[in-house]
Every structure is written in C-alpha cells, then in structure tokens.
Image 1 (cartoon, rainbow over the protein chains, first blue to last red):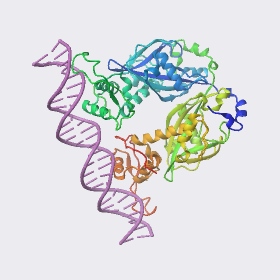
Image 2: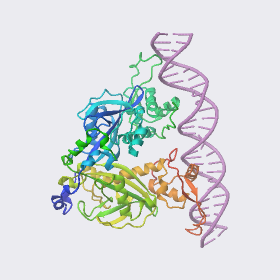
Image 3: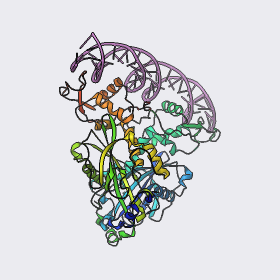
Length: 276
Length: 276
DNA sequence: ACAAAAGTGTTACCCGTACACCCATGC
DNA sequence: GCATGGGTGTACGGGTAACACTTTTGT
C-alpha cells in the first residue's frame, strides 16, 4: 500500500477529498473460459436470469468488489464460483485480455451507471458440467464454432440485433469472446499454453489434437514431435503403464507431464485453417 | 447503442435502477508515450503539480469522462493534450496494454475512491518538447535507461519507497511503464511497429537504429536489409535527392516511406541485449 | 587517397515441409 | 494377419546468422 505520510501535505488532501465529485463507474470482469470437449473448442456461457439482457446468453463474470480486490482477484473468485472448482488447485491459466468501456455497452448507462469490464481468458482440460449460479438460469459449454461469432460481432458493432440460429449473446460479449479467442489462437504459436488444455498424463497426440481443435488445423506430426521434444523442459516423461489396453486399439502412446517451459522459439506456425 | 425496447421488461428494470447502490469507482487512462531522441528510447513523464503524489514524476493521463467516452477516446484526447499534436493527423500508433486495479494503487482509496486505470502505449518519431499541462509542473522525455525501472518496480511491489538517483515515479507507474516497455519490445519482433518511430522519408539505417535503441542491440545489417526489403509492401521507395550533402559524409542512403504491411513473418529475433 | 557510411555476396546451418517407413497392440 | 493409432527417418528447400567484401560520397 502507499503510505501517504511519506508525502508532505497528502494526508490533508485526502481528508478533504470528496469522491462523490465523480459520477459513478462500475468495474466488472468477464470470463472467457475455454476447454476442449470431444475434440472441439468450447466456451462457457450462462443464460442470464436477470436484467439487463435477461434470457440472453453471456460470458460469466461479475463486479469487482469495491476497495477490497483487484480485477485479477475478482476474476479468480468468479472463476471458482462458475466452474465449481478451486482454480489455484487446478493450476489453470488465467490472463487479462483487454478492457471494454464504451458507454453504450451496458444498458445501465441509461440509469447513469457507466460500466467498464476487464476481460480475461482461462484455459482448462475438460471440466465437469457447470452449475447455474445466482444470476444464471442455465450454464453450459458451447462449441465456439456454433456461435457465429463473426456475424454476432458485426451485428453488435453495426448496432443491429442478431437474429441467427446461434444462442444470442448479450452486451458486447460477441466482441469480447472473439477477441479472446484470437488471443488464445495467437498465443498457442509462441507459448506453451496448449499444455493447459490437456490433463496429465497426456500423449503427444493428445497435445497435437489441442492445436487441431483451436486452430482448425493439425500440425504435421513428425515436425510437431521434434519441436515439442526438442524444447528444453517442455515435457517430462510419465509412467507409460496407465493407458495400456484402452481406446480403440493401436500402439499405446508415451505419456508426459507438463514441464516448466513457457515459450516456443521459434514459434509454431498455424498457417490458414484447413478447408472444411 | 443498445435498444432496451427490444428486450421485454428491461425498460422497467432500468427506470427503477439505482446506480448509487454501487460504491464509486473512477476510471482513468495512463499513457506510455515513447519516442527516440538522439538514438535513445525515451518516455514522456510529467511532474505532478497536485495531490496525490505531488512532486513525483508520473505518466500523463486523466479521467475517462463519464457517459460520453470510452478509454480509447480518453487516451486519444489526453495524448493530444499532452503532446500538443493532433494524433490522428500524425498517424501515430496508440494501443491498449492492460488495466491496473489494485485498491492500494491510488491513495484516494483512503477517501473511498477505487481508481482503475487502463494503460496505453503510443509511439512517435522525435516530437517537440511537451508543454506542462494543468496537472503538471514540468513535462519532459526521459531516457528509459535512466529510470531504473526494475528497481522502482520491485520497490513498489515490495511496498518500500524508492530512494535512488532516478526521478521517482508516483503510483504504480514504474510497473505500468515497464510492462508497456516489454510489450513494445516484444511487438517489434513480429509487427512493423518500428516504422512508427521514424519520420518519412527514412533510410534502412534509420530504421535499424530504432531496433538498436529499443532492444539495446542492432540486428545484423545485411540480414535486416533482406528481411525488410523482402517483406511485401513494407517499404516504398521515396525520392532519394533530399538528404544528399548532409550528415558527416559517406554514401547517401536510399530513402523510403512506410508501406501497408503490418506483420513480420517469421519474426525478427532480438536475442539477448549486447553487453554494455 | 582515405575514412565513413551504405549496400552486396557467400557460406553454413537450422528448421519446416513432405512423405515414406517402422512399431505395438486388439481383433 | 491386418487394421489402427503411435512413433521414426530422410531428403529437399527456404531463411537466417555470420562475416567478408564492394560502392559511393565528403574532405
């Protein structure tokens, strides 16, 4: 904390300071929680139980508590609530993306409340189905492919309502989610974030499928293998016994645990997604 | 904007909504304005004329206006005020970095105001000396090397006052500035941001000196030249006449203007900074 | 002529690509 | 056996790193 006593005159200034001179902002966090289910990249969405955007789908999130926490803390707290897990135990990844502060992004501006939201993304291996929370009628993982994010994003930016097949996202959440998704896709190139999508122990093929799910394109296997095994302390061998007589048949894979490496250098390139 | 009328029941909700139920946050922007002077990377700092942190040096910035602008707009507005230039005319780069929201980051928390700040960085060719603004006793560009950012950052995070030779930064601005600096250094690798540091027309050597100033290490010239000239529409030839009988003598360089390319692929690697 | 600054060539090596091939297991 | 998924080898080519070299100017 900042000891005002070390700065002459500041204590008197603070004693006379009137915070109500500033009209109210609210600070919230929005969470983009990604996971891979059945080989498909999914994001957690909730169906809003209350106004505004009642009945719409939205990113989980909530208010930063005044005076007691920062946005990171609030994001962690909400994450634990929404997934029903202790995130610090899971060891999952949580990272700030950017902040959205358009006056018109939250209808409560009409009541005089200007709401800014700090967006985060979180990555996790396949998680149990979420519980609907206090502000959520339903909660589920949606394949991002099914959300028509490009169309919903453009609709929001143009100020037109979206009327397609996909669940309609409230607020500017189509914008936030597509920004976060692009960030995750980009970071898979030059960081070891892909490891956050698999549970230990995992095979190289498991890890490679992560890239396929996120990028829509699987990297060439031999090169992928050389890159991963060649990166210092990226993968640690695990007992190979576990998953012997499982799956559909075929050679049992070598299994690994996550190492400490954080960066892929040079990056693993994604190129253009495969044609469908 | 969002038409609440399209969402049943929301108008009534908003009419009854009481924004004062939420204790006040303030939303500010902080600007990391970088330029290169005499071959040295500099950041614009102001000496604070008022409380809090009166007499300390700080990043320029200010409050986001309630209900009328977003953080991007506020950052542009402050940027114009602080540099005395019309940024949209200059065509300079302005980009959000991240948001800082620790309760203890601004002493006004003691008066009940929780201040969150959205940090930006801006890049520009050598700019005229800045004017001291309303909230600034002085304003000047400081070589980032001279700020002992690592030490000031660690001091802030440990909660100890910094007492070194460099101008002492108020708030958590040593943290913000070092984060922004690292972001800029990283983005020079894989984007064409370096072009924002030179004024047109420029030579390849000018551009190469940008990398030297930002990274503390000049890329190998032949390879640098091949990469830049080989990237599609990165550099457009300019009339070579201008800078003929100037400088210290030597072969006059080919001159260029900025092209439309946004990315360097594969990235230009920086490696470790040269020993001093 | 000489120094200084700009620009060119040459070689070796790393790494990504592509594709052919080998291994271990269940049926 | 043989299908299936997992794992390996090798040849080619582009791009970078490193460094020696040439060109154009001012004095």
